[in-house]
Length: 225
Figure 1 (cartoon, helix red, strand yellow):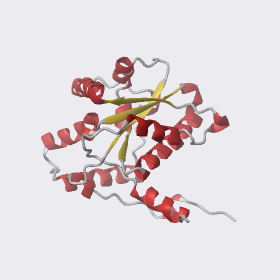
Figure 2: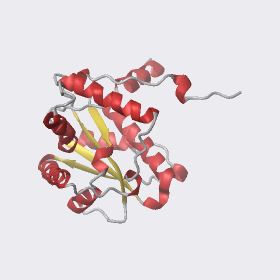
Figure 3: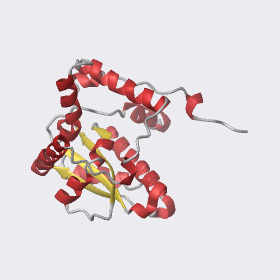
Protein backbone atom coordinates (compact mmCIF):
# COMPACT_ATOMS: atom_id res chain seq x y z
CA UNK A 1 0.00 0.00 0.00
CA UNK A 2 1.30 3.46 -0.90
CA UNK A 3 2.45 5.60 2.02
CA UNK A 4 0.41 8.67 1.07
CA UNK A 5 1.85 11.10 3.66
CA UNK A 6 5.41 10.26 2.62
CA UNK A 7 4.53 10.38 -1.08
CA UNK A 8 2.90 13.78 -0.71
CA UNK A 9 5.82 15.14 1.30
CA UNK A 10 8.24 13.95 -1.38
CA UNK A 11 6.25 15.62 -4.16
CA UNK A 12 5.76 18.87 -2.22
CA UNK A 13 9.46 19.11 -1.35
CA UNK A 14 10.55 18.23 -4.89
CA UNK A 15 8.65 21.17 -6.34
CA UNK A 16 10.97 24.11 -6.90
CA UNK A 17 11.19 27.10 -9.21
CA UNK A 18 12.84 25.66 -12.32
CA UNK A 19 14.73 28.21 -14.39
CA UNK A 20 16.01 26.01 -17.20
CA UNK A 21 14.03 23.57 -19.31
CA UNK A 22 14.63 21.02 -22.03
CA UNK A 23 12.95 21.73 -25.39
CA UNK A 24 10.93 18.50 -25.34
CA UNK A 25 7.18 19.25 -25.32
CA UNK A 26 4.74 17.50 -23.01
CA UNK A 27 2.35 15.29 -25.00
CA UNK A 28 -1.08 16.90 -25.38
CA UNK A 29 -2.93 14.01 -23.73
CA UNK A 30 -0.70 14.25 -20.65
CA UNK A 31 -1.04 18.04 -20.61
CA UNK A 32 -4.82 17.77 -20.52
CA UNK A 33 -4.63 15.13 -17.78
CA UNK A 34 -2.47 17.39 -15.61
CA UNK A 35 -4.76 20.38 -16.07
CA UNK A 36 -7.75 18.22 -15.13
CA UNK A 37 -5.97 17.37 -11.88
CA UNK A 38 -5.34 21.09 -11.31
CA UNK A 39 -9.06 21.68 -11.78
CA UNK A 40 -9.81 19.68 -8.63
CA UNK A 41 -8.48 22.61 -6.58
CA UNK A 42 -10.90 24.27 -4.16
CA UNK A 43 -12.42 27.69 -4.72
CA UNK A 44 -14.76 30.02 -2.88
CA UNK A 45 -18.35 28.86 -3.49
CA UNK A 46 -16.96 26.53 -6.19
CA UNK A 47 -16.70 29.59 -8.46
CA UNK A 48 -13.55 28.29 -10.21
CA UNK A 49 -12.68 31.80 -11.44
CA UNK A 50 -9.43 30.78 -13.13
CA UNK A 51 -9.33 31.31 -16.88
CA UNK A 52 -6.14 29.66 -18.10
CA UNK A 53 -4.40 30.13 -21.43
CA UNK A 54 -1.71 27.55 -22.24
CA UNK A 55 0.72 28.43 -25.02
CA UNK A 56 3.22 26.10 -26.68
CA UNK A 57 5.53 25.71 -29.65
CA UNK A 58 5.94 28.40 -32.28
CA UNK A 59 3.16 30.50 -30.76
CA UNK A 60 5.07 30.74 -27.50
CA UNK A 61 8.22 31.83 -29.30
CA UNK A 62 6.22 34.55 -31.08
CA UNK A 63 4.91 35.86 -27.77
CA UNK A 64 8.45 35.71 -26.41
CA UNK A 65 9.59 38.09 -29.14
CA UNK A 66 6.72 40.49 -28.39
CA UNK A 67 7.43 40.43 -24.66
CA UNK A 68 11.17 41.00 -25.05
CA UNK A 69 10.43 43.97 -27.32
CA UNK A 70 7.96 45.38 -24.78
CA UNK A 71 10.45 44.97 -21.93
CA UNK A 72 13.17 46.77 -23.85
CA UNK A 73 10.72 49.53 -24.79
CA UNK A 74 9.54 49.93 -21.20
CA UNK A 75 5.98 49.15 -22.28
CA UNK A 76 4.79 47.62 -19.00
CA UNK A 77 1.06 47.77 -18.39
CA UNK A 78 0.26 45.50 -15.43
CA UNK A 79 -3.22 45.04 -14.08
CA UNK A 80 -3.98 46.69 -10.74
CA UNK A 81 -2.57 43.98 -8.47
CA UNK A 82 0.96 44.46 -9.85
CA UNK A 83 1.23 48.23 -9.48
CA UNK A 84 2.30 48.48 -5.85
CA UNK A 85 5.68 47.27 -4.61
CA UNK A 86 5.11 45.02 -1.56
CA UNK A 87 8.81 44.21 -1.10
CA UNK A 88 9.72 46.16 2.03
CA UNK A 89 11.36 45.07 5.27
CA UNK A 90 11.75 41.31 5.65
CA UNK A 91 10.05 40.73 2.29
CA UNK A 92 12.73 42.80 0.57
CA UNK A 93 15.44 40.86 2.39
CA UNK A 94 13.99 37.54 1.21
CA UNK A 95 13.68 38.82 -2.35
CA UNK A 96 17.33 39.93 -2.37
CA UNK A 97 18.37 36.59 -0.90
CA UNK A 98 16.64 34.71 -3.71
CA UNK A 99 18.30 36.91 -6.35
CA UNK A 100 21.73 36.48 -4.77
CA UNK A 101 21.31 32.69 -4.72
CA UNK A 102 20.44 32.66 -8.42
CA UNK A 103 23.24 35.03 -9.44
CA UNK A 104 25.84 33.08 -7.47
CA UNK A 105 24.71 29.78 -8.98
CA UNK A 106 24.78 31.13 -12.53
CA UNK A 107 27.97 33.17 -12.17
CA UNK A 108 26.38 36.58 -12.62
CA UNK A 109 28.54 39.26 -11.01
CA UNK A 110 27.02 41.95 -8.82
CA UNK A 111 28.27 44.75 -11.08
CA UNK A 112 27.88 42.92 -14.41
CA UNK A 113 24.99 44.96 -15.74
CA UNK A 114 24.74 43.12 -19.05
CA UNK A 115 24.70 39.67 -17.45
CA UNK A 116 22.09 40.80 -14.91
CA UNK A 117 19.91 42.15 -17.72
CA UNK A 118 20.18 38.88 -19.65
CA UNK A 119 19.32 36.96 -16.50
CA UNK A 120 16.22 39.13 -16.06
CA UNK A 121 15.18 38.68 -19.69
CA UNK A 122 15.20 34.91 -19.25
CA UNK A 123 11.88 35.42 -17.46
CA UNK A 124 10.38 36.50 -20.77
CA UNK A 125 12.07 33.67 -22.63
CA UNK A 126 10.25 31.34 -20.25
CA UNK A 127 13.64 29.90 -19.26
CA UNK A 128 13.51 28.03 -22.60
CA UNK A 129 10.40 26.11 -21.52
CA UNK A 130 8.25 24.59 -24.28
CA UNK A 131 5.05 25.68 -22.51
CA UNK A 132 3.71 28.63 -20.55
CA UNK A 133 0.36 29.34 -18.95
CA UNK A 134 -1.29 32.60 -17.94
CA UNK A 135 -3.97 32.79 -15.28
CA UNK A 136 -6.75 35.34 -15.72
CA UNK A 137 -9.83 36.07 -13.64
CA UNK A 138 -12.74 38.52 -13.53
CA UNK A 139 -11.34 41.35 -11.35
CA UNK A 140 -14.53 41.58 -9.28
CA UNK A 141 -13.42 38.43 -7.42
CA UNK A 142 -10.61 40.43 -5.79
CA UNK A 143 -8.70 38.72 -2.99
CA UNK A 144 -11.01 35.70 -3.01
CA UNK A 145 -10.30 35.10 -6.69
CA UNK A 146 -6.56 35.59 -6.19
CA UNK A 147 -6.62 32.99 -3.40
CA UNK A 148 -8.55 30.59 -5.64
CA UNK A 149 -6.03 30.98 -8.45
CA UNK A 150 -3.18 30.44 -6.01
CA UNK A 151 -4.70 27.13 -4.90
CA UNK A 152 -5.31 26.13 -8.51
CA UNK A 153 -1.76 26.99 -9.56
CA UNK A 154 -0.21 25.16 -6.62
CA UNK A 155 -2.26 22.06 -7.45
CA UNK A 156 -1.05 22.37 -11.04
CA UNK A 157 2.59 22.70 -9.99
CA UNK A 158 2.34 19.66 -7.71
CA UNK A 159 0.71 17.64 -10.50
CA UNK A 160 3.57 18.61 -12.80
CA UNK A 161 6.13 17.63 -10.17
CA UNK A 162 4.41 14.28 -9.59
CA UNK A 163 4.76 13.57 -13.31
CA UNK A 164 8.47 14.37 -13.47
CA UNK A 165 8.10 17.92 -14.77
CA UNK A 166 9.10 21.31 -13.46
CA UNK A 167 7.60 24.77 -13.34
CA UNK A 168 8.30 28.35 -12.39
CA UNK A 169 5.53 30.67 -11.24
CA UNK A 170 6.37 34.16 -12.50
CA UNK A 171 4.79 37.41 -11.42
CA UNK A 172 6.90 39.00 -14.16
CA UNK A 173 4.69 37.40 -16.82
CA UNK A 174 1.79 39.47 -15.54
CA UNK A 175 3.62 42.79 -15.90
CA UNK A 176 2.95 43.01 -19.64
CA UNK A 177 -0.67 41.91 -19.61
CA UNK A 178 -1.40 44.31 -22.48
CA UNK A 179 0.89 42.31 -24.76
CA UNK A 180 -0.39 38.92 -23.62
CA UNK A 181 -4.06 39.87 -23.91
CA UNK A 182 -3.55 41.29 -27.37
CA UNK A 183 -1.61 38.28 -28.62
CA UNK A 184 -4.00 35.70 -27.18
CA UNK A 185 -7.23 37.56 -27.82
CA UNK A 186 -8.09 37.72 -24.12
CA UNK A 187 -10.91 39.99 -22.96
CA UNK A 188 -9.43 43.32 -21.82
CA UNK A 189 -11.75 43.24 -18.83
CA UNK A 190 -10.06 40.20 -17.30
CA UNK A 191 -7.24 40.57 -14.78
CA UNK A 192 -3.93 38.85 -15.55
CA UNK A 193 -2.56 37.51 -12.26
CA UNK A 194 0.71 35.79 -13.22
CA UNK A 195 2.20 33.20 -15.54
CA UNK A 196 3.84 29.81 -15.28
CA UNK A 197 6.66 28.39 -17.39
CA UNK A 198 6.76 24.60 -17.37
CA UNK A 199 8.19 21.50 -19.00
CA UNK A 200 10.94 18.97 -18.37
CA UNK A 201 13.76 20.44 -16.22
CA UNK A 202 17.28 20.80 -17.58
CA UNK A 203 19.11 19.41 -14.56
CA UNK A 204 22.52 20.28 -16.04
CA UNK A 205 21.89 24.03 -16.00
CA UNK A 206 23.78 25.94 -13.27
CA UNK A 207 20.56 27.57 -12.03
CA UNK A 208 19.61 24.23 -10.45
CA UNK A 209 22.25 24.93 -7.80
CA UNK A 210 20.38 28.02 -6.59
CA UNK A 211 18.89 27.12 -3.21
CA UNK A 212 16.56 29.47 -1.36
CA UNK A 213 15.87 29.12 2.33
CA UNK A 214 12.55 29.12 4.14
CA UNK A 215 11.65 31.21 7.15
CA UNK A 216 11.27 29.36 10.47
CA UNK A 217 7.78 28.03 11.14
CA UNK A 218 7.49 30.31 14.18
CA UNK A 219 7.84 33.37 11.92
CA UNK A 220 4.97 32.34 9.68
CA UNK A 221 2.51 30.25 11.68
CA UNK A 222 0.90 31.21 14.99
CA UNK A 223 -0.83 28.47 16.98
CA UNK A 224 -3.59 29.40 19.45
CA UNK A 225 -5.26 27.25 22.09
